[in-house]
Amino acid sequence: MEPILELNSARLLMRQWRDDDLPAFAQMCADPQVMKYFPAPMSRLESAKLIGRIRGHFAEYGFGLWALERKDNGHFIGFTGLCVVGFDAHFTPSVEIGWRLAREHWGLGFASEAAWTALGCGFEHLDLDEIVSFTAVSNQASQKVMQAIGMHNDPDDGFDHPNLPDGHPLKAHVLYRINRQQWLATL
Image (cartoon, rainbow, N blue to C red; front, side, top):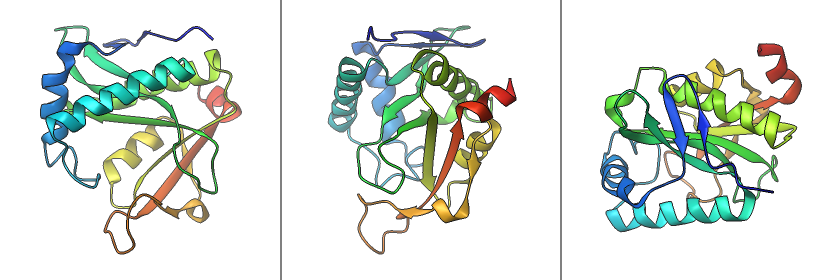
């Protein structure tokens, strides 16, 4: 399949990563508030490696986490997209929708807008039957985005993230899902 290199929403260009995204991305990933629901803030090198893994995902699957650029000013603000879940759980194999935005762009509806666009790509172009999303139980902001884009949570779907050690405060996760029929019903 030919990679899906670009998507557009009303206010955002969802595009491939450029080398000049690294400074803003590294700054975002070093922000303790942005990384509050991840194991730790990331160094510049860790951020660069993540961009490399994202590019590799696009090369392997034809889709991934698109860089988000505001159309009104051209600023890089984070990422949103789809990726194959990289660990074993009761809901895998599956494709996850995820996002991460710089703090100054929170609360403006960008995460929901980009996520909605990514869902459309997943169901219309990739012909997926279901898309999942998950986060730490305490991450209410991401759960609100999941709900805003029509995803549903079954409390029985909760799980402990296998990449976090026992006793870690972020180990308990919630799982949200949306299938093609649920997505079509929201149109």
